[in-house]
Length: 297
Image 1 (spheres, rainbow, N blue to C red):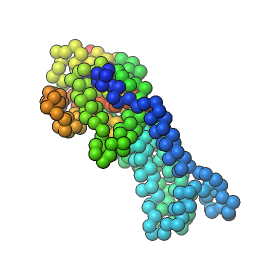
Image 2: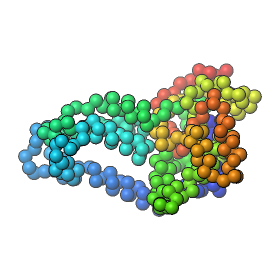
Image 3: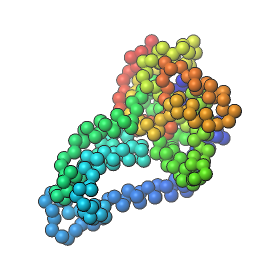
Image 4: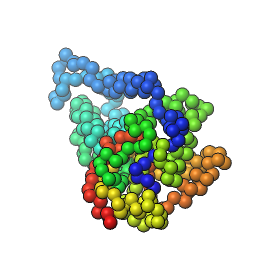
């Protein structure tokens, strides 16, 4: 495992988002977000506790029967999960989304029954992090040492949007447009140590277990890296942006006979390492802790 990171230069171009496509996706995404934002103030008398801001969503919600409304906490929890899976929100952005959603429920009419009431924001945050995020560790020589070798300007959300666009464009015949298999091959090459043109970054579920890696004779192996790096960083990343060896194996099983060597290699990845790959050039956005390397020799 090489935590410095990373596909063939020619293959790497397969994964980049064309500028025009990226701009179109960004415009469409921002338009969808704007539809959830306040659009005007009402001149009607304000309800108690209301800020006077009315959205189209508020208007539609008031036409729903009280016994058919979702509970406020369910609304907040769903918004938080969408922020994770659609925007790859980091911990700070997730907290802000939960707070915003909770503030919106506080403006709901008081006669909504189960929709009313305060929301335990901390519990929602903890639950969503536990179910939709992975806490991973990485040995580094310095804080900025967490970029992939290629496509470092593409964030995790950029990759997610690109894959979503291709699924839409090729549906229903090929919902992945071949990109999933290509990325699976690139991930396998990364795990085999060919990181020179990879869009992935290596992390571990438990950094201390790298000391048990069987490749201790390799100067670039996991054990050597664990004992020589200056720092140990912890990242809390959305699971939708991570690639485990089990996921890569499942992808390669849908490939061709040419994929069999990579499939065999990844299947035999040392369990001690528990390597997980992050797809994106913005891993530093997800850093939640750092310390001097306690295992440095």
